[in-house]
Amino acid sequence: MFNKLRSDIGCILDRDPAARSWWEVLTCYPGLHAIYIHKLARWFWLRGLRWLGRFTSHIGRWLTGIEIHPGAQIGSCVFIDHGQGVVIGETAEVGDGCTIYQGVTLGGTSLYPGTKRHPTLGAGVIVAAGAKVLGGFTVGDGARIGANAVVLKEVPAGATVVGVPGRIVKGEGAERDARFAAYGVGNEFEDPHAKAIQALVAYTEELEQRLRRLEAGESPEKDKNIRIVK
Image (cartoon, rainbow, N blue to C red; front, side, top):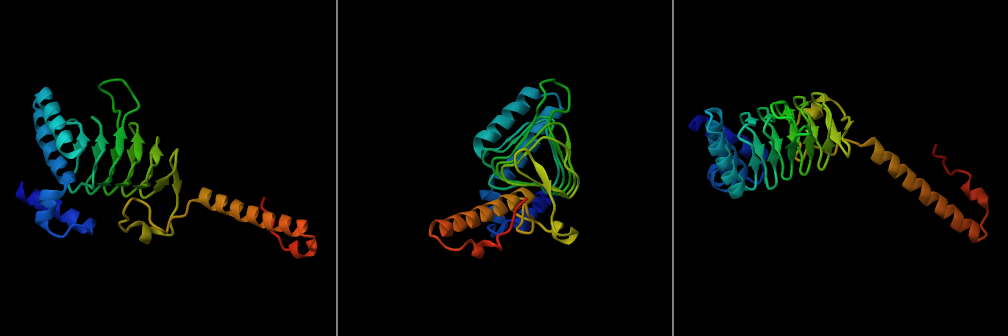
């Protein structure tokens, strides 16, 4: 038990530069508190004490702002950073070494009891602030879900997903993908949709400049080098 607690505190110290000591983590990190309250709630749940499990979970939500259903499976060294507003549903599974930020929902899209309604996160997955992962599919090992993304289908291992609905964007090589990136998306990831919008904005600015020159009576010869966006 104490070895497990030491390991969980160590993973927080490794991933959060704001954490200065094990005592600070132990006393001031609601994500750690929520995980251990969940362990107690799940102990009751698995022994058929369903109401007591739910009540313990409810107390944990009240104390930490993090709601984890006692039926959910949480792996080792899971770090819930900040944590306010995190919701993890009954059939969700969170793999070892995952990082979950505030406002994340691991929710279900089915209303049928007894079915796999909530997502499974593989090992080392990062789910950034405000992201919603909805459905009974799998997010592969090492995947990253960007801030405020809404993910409705399976995510391959190592992929990075952004946007609404979530879409996969590619990084610049496996070496970069292997590094820890706070909030899921580092500067090395470029969204092709964002790049296209930026190109259109630049083209519009060029057209506006050309129009102003024409209105001023300047020669259009200066505009021969204007690029055409197709």
